[in-house]
Length: 94
Image (cartoon, rainbow, N blue to C red):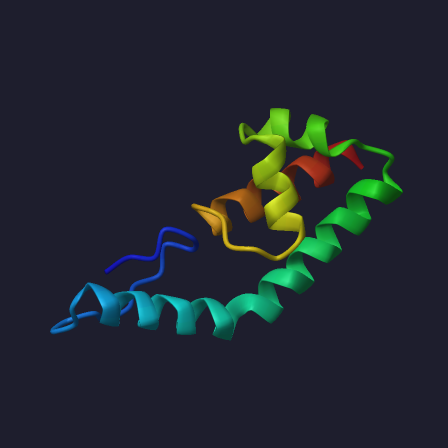
């Protein structure tokens, strides 16, 4: 199965729906700290540059609520793509 958050693959062979959900929640818990650190880092850079979250969200093609979740370290679909687009935007803006 491919994770909708970071596009990495994890094995759910032989698991029922409940087992897959448990594995998904465990995987989220394992990665939560890293996501939080990345979100905080990019939010701090954005604020230092004086750029609004809405401007970043519009520029990288996501909703403001998705950007907020990302900055808070919560899982978002295609998280690695969001991270890379966010970094690129800040680099070009700075």
